[in-house]
Image (cartoon, rainbow, N blue to C red; front, side, top):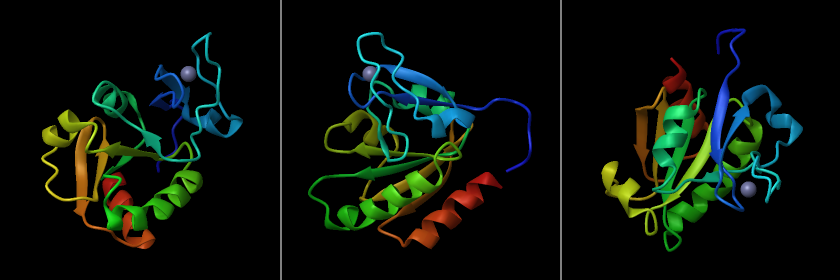
Length: 152
Ligand SMILES: [Zn+2]
């Protein structure tokens, strides 16, 4: 990634209360907390962040780093196989790439809008637009390549 003095931000929904938070990408390692006065719980950015129909566009359009989204379902075996890979990458990329997941059974509007026909499907978004996608479970190195391609 090119050096820049511009502060980049991640937009993420709180896993506990759903409040959408805007986080300085350089401060992710400081374990930021939810900005809601009633919550203040940690945002858990070292693991995949669950996105929903209500916040998906806000997160994709407001986040300045690439966003990797795993479209999955709980009953899907290959999705379960992918989960540890995405957990690893979320921890490794903390603040540099936002790793997110969408439960296609629950968030049907988002799944339909992105024409998800099989799961798992991985999509990479940058600058609010989808720039790469891959259907089916793939190894960690292939996920890294998918995101590297998106960074140009
Ligand atoms: Zn919260």
